[in-house]
Length: 161
View 1 (cartoon, rainbow, N blue to C red):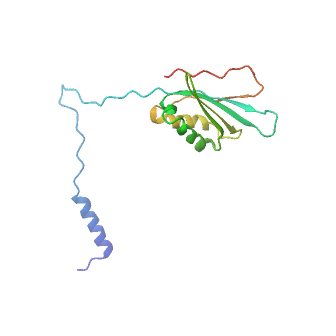
View 2: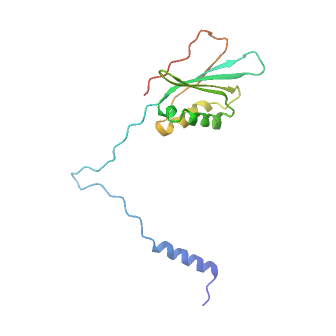
């Protein structure tokens, strides 16, 4: 009896699948009375950030937002914040005049974006960049006009959680 090529391929694949051993079952709980072995959880590094934007030229046709992001933790120290800059570009588009500074109490980024950026893009970039070392949740970016509160100081770095 002659076998069709499709049937021959099917049979060879089915045979190959049956010849592989089944995966071993995960070990069950220890015998009654003994504690199950649970891997130790490693503490996550403390990361922090806050976010303030100043809208420049509030009465002009062309407006920009100057952002100030004080932050600290391995999410910015490990790579001089290049991961954050990459995430900002992916989430918000063009980043103009990126400036990184290392202040005595931590790290801060200053940069400019168009006034037209996706809602929440900076918050998303902060979370995505910090996630590998302990994602920062709940950062809210506030904006204000350039002329509002000329003596307003930018917020200090929040304490790590």
